[in-house]
Length: 353
Image 1 (spheres, rainbow, N blue to C red):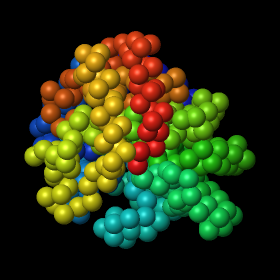
Image 2: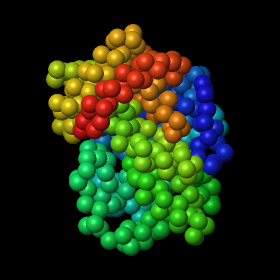
Image 3: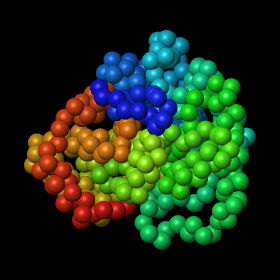
C-alpha cells in the first residue's frame, strides 16, 4: 500500500480510503467489521464515514454506520491504527437536527453525537457534508444550472465564519483534529482558507467530491486549487455509483445493488446519473477494458489513482469479493495506450450527466 500526505496535517493516509456508507443497510455489523479487519490487513489506514449514513438514507438507519465503526473500535482496540474521517450533515431531513442549514451550533451538536456513536474521543478529519449555498454538484455541474448571483455573498461569508469558529472550538478541546469539506468548490476552499489566515482558524485540509470516468468536472479548476494550496483531494463514487461496472446496462437493476435497494424503499436512486450519454460513455469505457483484458472497475479505480492531484480514493463495496478486487486495483498499471483510449472516450462524453 502506498501513502500520501493529507494536506498539511502531517498525516500519511493510504491511497485507498475505505468508504463505509452501506454498513447498516446493505451490510450487517458483522460484514462491516470484516471489511475493516481486511482493509487494515491490506494497509488501509484511512476510513471515511458520516453521521448521515447508512445509504440510502432514511430515519431508521441514521447514524447506523458510525455505530458499527464504534463497536469495531471497542472490540478490536484498533482506534489508534485508523485515521478516521466523518461528516456533519447540512440542510436536509427533518430528523437530523430539524433539517436546518449548517451553523456553528450544528457543528457543536453533531460532533457530540458522532463521538458517542463512534465510541472515540476524537475524529481525525471532520468534514462539512455539503454547503448551505447553491453548489454545482449532484447533477448540477453543467453550465447555467446554478445561479450564483441569487445569494448575497456577505451573508454566505458570515455563515462560513460562524461554522469555522465552531470547528476551531472543537479542535481546541481535542474532539476534532482537522477540518475538511465535501461537495464544495474552489471558491469554498479559498474563502475558508482566507478566513483561516485572517482569524487564526483551522484551514481546509481536504475536500471530497464526486469524481470518476463519468464525472471529471473538478479537473482542472478545483484540481489546481488542491495542488497549489496543499488541500487533499478525496474522490468519492469513483465507480459512478456502480454504473461503471456495467451492471446497469440495458436497463438492468440487479437485486442487491444500490439502485435496487433504493427503488425497493421508494427512495431516489443513484441511477439518476443514467441517461443516453452516460450509457454510451460507459459502453466506451467497457470496450477499452475488454480490449485490454482489464476488469472495468479496476481500470476505473486505477485511472483515478493516477491523477496527480488525488490523495486517496474512497472505495466502497457490499461484498468481500468486491472489496478485494477494488483494493487490488491500486496495484495494477495502466499503459499509455490504455490512458489514450480512455481519453478518446472522455472527449466524446466529457459531462454525460
